Amino acid sequence: MKKNSFYLIVLSLLTVIGLFVPVETVTAADTALEDIQEKGTLVIGTSADFPPYEFHSTVDGKDTIVGMDISIAQKIAEDLGVELKIEDIGFDSLLPALESEKVDMVISGMSPTDERKKSVDFSDVYYTGGQNIVVREADKEIYTNAEDLTGMKVGVQTGSLQETLAKEQMPDSELLSLSKITDLILALKTNKIEAILMEKPSAEAYIGNDDQLVTFDGGFLLEDGEQGSAIAFKKDAQSLVEAVNTSLVEISDQDLISDYLEEAGTYLQAAQQGTNGDEESSNSIFNYWQYFLRGTGYTILISVVSVFFGSILGIGLSFMRMSKNKLMHFVATAYVEFVRGTPMMIQVMFIYFAVGYLINIPALASGIIAVSLNSAAYICEIIRSGLNSVPKGQAEAARSLGMSKKISMRQIIFPQALKNIWPALGNEFITVIKESSIVSIIGVSDLIFQTKVVTSVSYRGIAPLVVTMIIYFILTFSLTKLLNHYEGKMNHD
Image 1 (cartoon, rainbow, N blue to C red):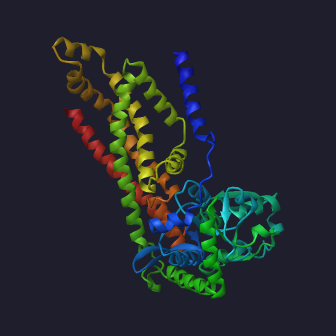
Image 2 (image 1 turned 90 degrees about the horizontal axis):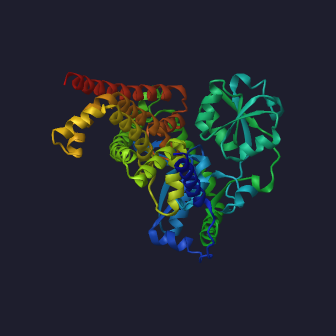
């Protein structure tokens, strides 16, 4: 048994290590621009929580990503003669999405630092803003510069230039790194942090829509690569970089940035007044019911499909683990132990990004696959324990009556096991509803994703969370009552 366990560990490690072993490749011809024009779409990656660069707004009754960066991307797509497609992903996942070819380029107020240039190429700088600090209005006399924040907790966006600046130029401050600006704003307003470092235009956009916040210049020392925003591309895509730079020159010559910023400002004002543009209803979080409804629909879809496929795979794995065939037992055991030993977040990102090198799987499908595979491991153990809980005498009695092994399992063993495992199985189904929220990190529009969108659009932090908690409670409570109903019927059989 110990020997088999040792082989299992070695095989698992070799499998994982093999995924990261570099393979010698021959440099291919640069066909980046040609490929985009051939497929007819330009896919951009962005983190749409960064007004006025990119953010969500309701346009003609529909949730739409707008902002200066989006207008620039639209101009580039028009110049290339292709359709623009936007992928909203967490900022810290944008470069992995680019490297795994999920997106063709990244435009998200990103600074072309030397560290980033090691892994991706950049366009010319298209906008230079500045680095500001945002604090609560009540603390504007306490914090007036970066030095005042010595020893204090400061918020930064994960993977951003501001995170690097804070580490280098504010070493005595404690950092809180979060992937979404909206989460940082909420942390600031609930006194979890004392300040936020962010781009000047974004800081001004937030304080312009929230009288509880103020901003000032951080006075940071910036190198050439840390000043301004540029568009990121995968390495060796020079043809696409040159085409984009041509569009950026036209944007600069025609001074279109000013128009783009003005347009973004109108969307920000509309967001402040609610989805209906009615100032009298702007205080109601229910103006954003469409976002919550859409997110709830995706959450239910992901949960139902994942439970269905997870149950089928879990049943198969449980029989494999109980099989006398050593190979089948080994494979099932290795799968269960590996899945249970790794976080679901890593599994979701692996399916979406790493497998993306081989097969381009959409974000929604990736999320469903990851949740299904994860749930299957736990369902396998639940079913296996239930089957083992049925006394062996039941199987022996069935065989003595002339029943085959399959018939006795289907008509005698499994019905008894189902009564034993039903509560645990129900808990797993409820867990899937809640843990499926992890798919929001790859841009799936589930309930958590839409909650962050509402937070960004409405500039309200607490109310969207309250609504989301209520929705999750309704979903899980309803499922619990349904499962209890069938459990009661089983007990009466």
